[in-house]
Length: 88
Image (cartoon, rainbow, N blue to C red; front, side):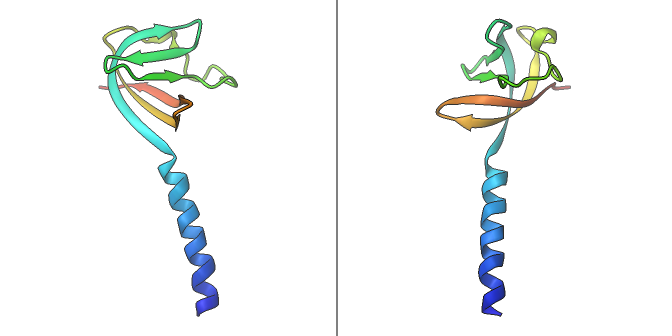
């Protein structure tokens, strides 16, 4: 039994770390910078498209004042957009 619990605990902790690595933010677009592939929200948070961006969610459709939901990863080194979608 003990031999089963240790690997199970390890798997569960790794799964929890993976879930915690992504965050969701909902806010109002303040600025979209096509040159740097970034979106800044009214609260000052800035999010970047990854360098390997393949065009699945272009920023050209977003304007100041739009409500968006952003799923992102990262932190101190920058917030990288995993997905972006309009709210409503």
